[in-house]
Length: 271
Image (tube, rainbow, N blue to C red):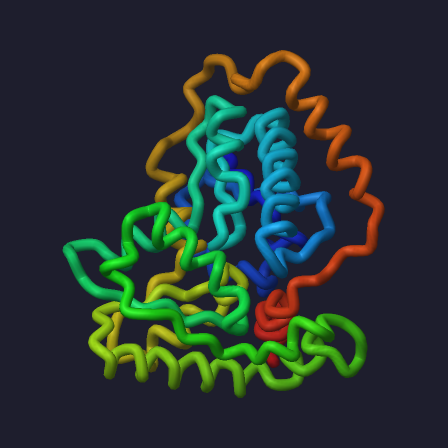
């Protein structure tokens, strides 16, 4: 069985790599393959979020053509989830959808802790409304500072700061989880799939369950079993090519890196 991970920016499955923590979750014969989005726009606002939906849609179409049996979006934002489901005859899983359902299972109240600043909360807040979990969520706690969004890259940017202070970020997230528990949360959902490598460390010190949405989505994808055949592409003729041409127009632009991805990279290097 092959699962396509849509939006992964680098090969995350090498031993010790950023998503090496997923390896123990994989059943015998299950492979994970990254399919990056070719839209280099970081989702600062709903505008860029819409662009990323197109980028992830194209990645989903590419993954389908290579013979994937299921697709997982590598973002809590579930970019393009509805469009991908409308375009391919494969099961598609969004960490936001699966993770929030797990966090709210059994009627429990949960909180979200994220490394992103408050201005990025429009993404999880929108999903809480869309998936019907607003009442169950007691709030969102943000560890990142707003200034981080102004200087993502460079030797003095947020990327470097996070790389140098990965332990401090883990401590800050851990404190936020404890604070959520003190407010009455019965579980905490990590607010970014880039936090996946930190999940085990955070769970070990947390007083309540910590939900890793990327792991939850990968586990859900495995349950569907290998693809049993049938038509893979369900979009109208020419639509996949149209999407590819749209994305090709911006694919060569400079990428706006995700600053928290470096947390995973640093952890993989033993930082």
